[in-house]
Length: 267
Length: 258
Image (cartoon, rainbow over all chains, first blue to last red):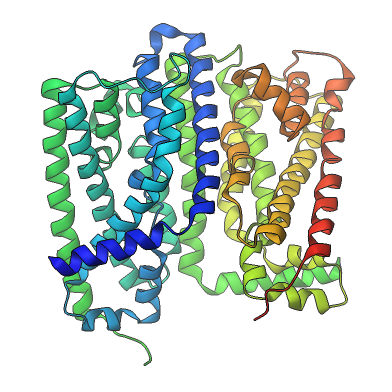
């Protein structure tokens, strides 16, 4: 356990180094969130009754999404893992007295955490002080805030567990490009990062909500904004736990199989 | 021009060597913009209209922006990855060759997998053209042509600015993404839906609205004035400050050695 903890710390501190990039990122995300809100406002004006959530809920959703982008988005892959697999450096990793799956998992979580830690504060701060209904409102109750924290952690683990599957396919394809881009575009849509899932038609939505991708950002952001609460929220968290366990099991299994076949090229 | 064609052929051949990866990437590009299309589709099945624009009109707008963007991205990709070119000293090699630097950067990378996005754009575009019920007279056709040319030029200009910034910061700045990727993502709706201030910004600062919004009004028959039709022309001029900025950067360039 101790070795993973220090691994986590090294990665975290490493990630904190790129401060200028983080500030540029904050500005980008802020502008992005702003444009997105303006777009939804135009649709809201067209037909307020067709809006599937309250506008203030949507604002909270979008600002939290921008603030914690690094925790939830699929496209924060660790490029050195891809490289390690393609170039054969994975051999060095295998020599280490650590479980490969756990090590990569921790690596991913840590760099996501450090990115989010640098970026979330300024966005949250400004977004709290925007005029209503464009601001982040406070959560309904301490209980729902707690539920949000729990499901946020779960969501991060789910997306990392999914990324692990993408890394593992690189053992077979060697070039990560194609798989990467396809999984990103698929997950972006199905996880509710392009438009929140309530905006989908009901039939499609009820299916999409059951998929593992809905367990990434959809659940925590909607719990915070009060769009799902109580029994429904508890159920979504259980579903998150299920998918997390499923994806981890699948990842471990496929990794073990891939390692049996792995041929390290060159020396 | 002959030289560029030669580069073109080389890039095409080299990218077709990794066939599976090429096909997957092209497919991925297709999927990415397909999910953008899906969001429009689902939003409109719920709301039907936005700021007076109908579904087929928004699709037409989206198609035009996407075609311009993917064309610009395919050819100006070298500028998009320019940070790495400075980083690995490749740019020094370019400087010593007896050819224009912009030409060489332009020719250094041609990304054919963007065809995935382009094909998608074309399908949407063709569908939108037939669904929009616009009578395609000569002037409308000319407007459309102007919009696309201007769009390609403006997006390329943005890529050049992005690359030019690398001279000052060595790292690429994420910030400019708001205008390139953001221009593509948010440009799928006519810029007026974001409100007056945003429209003004995209008219006078980053002139994306000059090819995307004003001529679009003319195209859909909302206004009749020739001014709107010719708005893409001043948009093309946007390339001038971009090139000046680039030149400024080149003059300031200090090799980081390698």
